Each structure stands twice: as structure tokens, then as C-alpha cells.
Length: 275
Image (tube, rainbow, N blue to C red; front, top):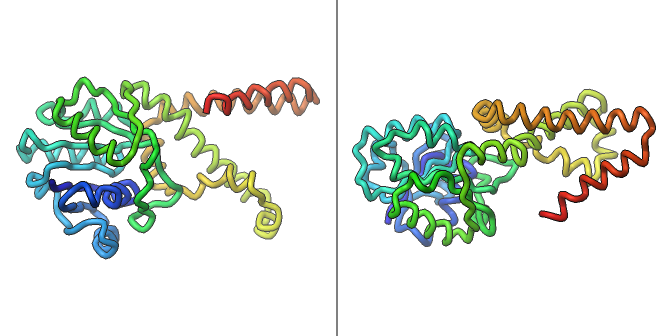
């Protein structure tokens, strides 16, 4: 079985490493010449291809930003793919993808989102166990053909992932609160500290708490900018919810309402009772 991966960064590269023993060969497509060269050098793929060459593969993984996934789906629809070709997408938001996928290939698409990642990007960041023991969300499974859904499940089982099914619209809202909003908060923490503190103080005093809170600010701004664009309204809702809690905390500190502040923090502790 041959796999074609569109997007040879962290997600596509890690998928390649993790499925080396599943597929007979893997070909890669990427608009970035450096990514193509690095993926070949690292052995992530056996050859570099173009989208039009993917007519000859059995499984296609789309691991680019959402706008790129939608554009590639439209290209694939023009290729008259064999009906047995399975298309997986790892887009970070799902509603636009399932809505804009051309109808002639929609049964072949299994819209998926692996809840896995790192703050680094590119093929050099790829690791073979990125997906191991992580959640794979499959959206709108009723729109995927049985053959393709079963093949996707077999591949995700090979990756040792747990499957969760979800509606695409609901997925995007949940992702805004649980993934996208924490990233933008981390960037805000980084920028607020950089604006107020000099480099020596940051180096001397930054401990594990600050490093944990600011770690996501190392994420690729180009990639996350695209994610924020795609999930704009849900992100706004999440940011407004965060702002409301932040205002509560600010007022309690200003008013010296220490017991009330402690109760508020105890409420926050409950998050870890369900995680």
C-alpha cells in the first residue's frame, strides 16, 4: 500500500515515521523546497511527488493548514481519483473542510484531528511517537464511506490512538476553548513580560511555572495565525470567556477579597478532577 502525504512538517513527518512499517512506500508533497529536501534526507518519504501524482496512491494524508487542505481537496476532485483511494485530513478545524470538500470525493474523506502536537514545527521536529496514546477526533463520520472509515480506523489503531467521534461544528468550538485560546493566552503572557522585564531578570527568575505558561508562545506564528483566522468567531467567544474570568480575578485582588479569590481558585482546581 502506498501513502501520499501533503505537508511534510511536524504532523505529516511524524505520521510518516509512525507508519513506515504500515505502508510499502510513502511519497511526499510540499510547497516548501527546504521541507522537501529535509524530508528526503531524513528518510521521512521515499520520493517527492506533486498533487497530480497522488492518483496512484492508496491513502492520501492532508497535513497542511486548513486553507491548503481545502485547496488540495479541490485539486484532488479534478483528478478522478479511484473510488478506493482514502483521504485523511489532519486540519485543526473541521467545519470548513467538511462543508467545502467537493461532493464527488466527500465519501472518500475521513475528517480527522489528532489531539497531538509540539511547540516546534517543520520536518526536523517530526517524532515517531507523536500520536501514540493520543486522541484522534473523527468528525461527521456518517458522511464518510464505510471502506474509508474502516481503513482510517485501522491506521489510527496502528498509531495506537483513541478515537472520539464529534460533529465538526462542535469540534471547532471545543478546540477554541481547549487548544486555541490557551495558545493566544501564552503569546499574551510572553509579550506582557517582554514589554515589562529586561532579559537578565527573565533569565534569572523564570521558573517552571512561567516556563509552563509561556511554552506555547514558542509555537509557529504562521501556523497559529492561520488557525486563528479559520476559527475566528469561536476564538473570540473563548477569549471573551477568559476575559470575564480575568476581570473577576482582577476585581477580587483590587478589593482585597482574599477568601473569595481562594474559592475562585478552588473552582479552578476542579479541572484536574476530570483530566
